[in-house]
Image 1 (cartoon, rainbow, N blue to C red):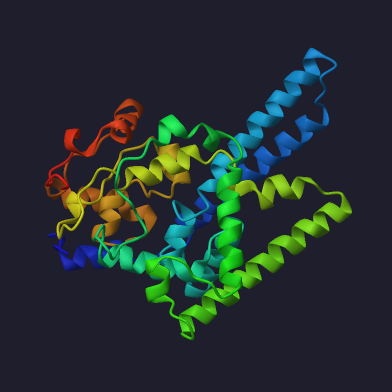
Image 2: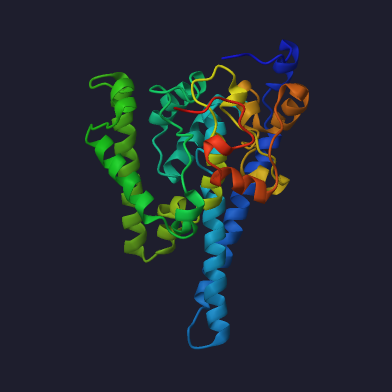
Length: 327
């Protein structure tokens, strides 16, 4: 990959881990989740179709639950989980590792698979036949994504089937078959992790139901599949309509400028080009890295209408593209 002109001394300074920026952001993220859950549960207890006030409480409970799901989705690999995988959130590698496995569990992702796929994604971004983590081709996410605003049961079913397959020592797809061949250490780790996730998820869900705590299901078991559209939109913007097989990351990866509150919950992953150029830089220093790189970076889109346009515009009509048209 083509290297950026950032001086080595500047990169070393920006790559220093610090705990407190991540501590307060983690507290804000989980604190917001707790508040939204409390509001939703309390309002649901007052919901009723017998009165206007009761109906309003039900609608507000639904609203806070959807908000909870939207914030929860940023715990995954398009948010906190991604940063934890890079070991840049805290100075302690053990703490990063423990939290990475925790959020992987909460969001129904296999951390063993992601570590390998994401390493390849950074080494060969959008390389045909190599990088299977991201598909930059346009997809009608906005037109067909209405179900992403509620409970995406189809996505839950896919995740469950993948975990069951992995737990049964089955790994499908060209990438998985190549990087996790039968009998390999990676394959055994993948299978072991899948079995652990399934046992813990299903065990806790069964215990919660047996004890009458149905809230566990909608605030933990299914939470990663509730109102995921905002997270999906931002994740797609990282590479959608960008060029494949390029050595220059500026042609394959996009930064978008967001309002600060949204960037906080996104763990600054909107500075995605800067992250790809220098993955060792922690989330809290990515805005500083952007300033340091200056004119080396292309102009970044901002504003809701502009960002939504990027998702709609075909690759050959995208004014942000500076790459060859795909055959």
